[in-house]
Length: 144
Image (cartoon, rainbow, N blue to C red; front, side):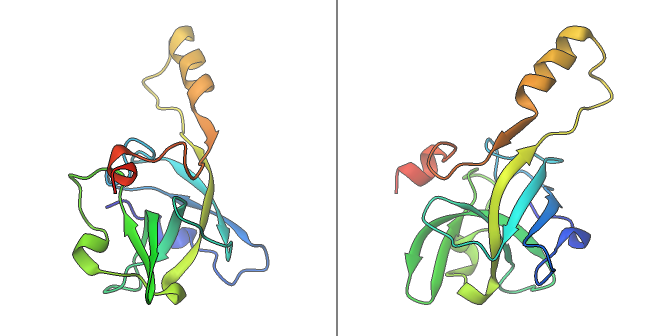
């Protein structure tokens, strides 16, 4: 399951934005291991948003998931990669107080293996993009 780096959390900071790094495959194809995220802490969450939350059973661990639906007691969250697990199908509804913020933007750092001019152009065209609610949802979310 992708977790933002622990030192990236900026909840309760003077500025409502912070940076987090994704580890793990559970949000593929929307987010990949190593992606950097711009997180809007305290932002209103709606169905389909990619969010950062505290893991319900291990609250020092931050995870990034998609808010699939509002249920009694909080949010049902899912990873975009159905084969990775580590979402509400494992731990149930996530209480509102554990939802920290909404992901607004994704930046994919350039790897050292991308040295050719064509590879650099390809990276530049795909490295940064906003993370939108409905547009990047996987078939898994749309099928529910």
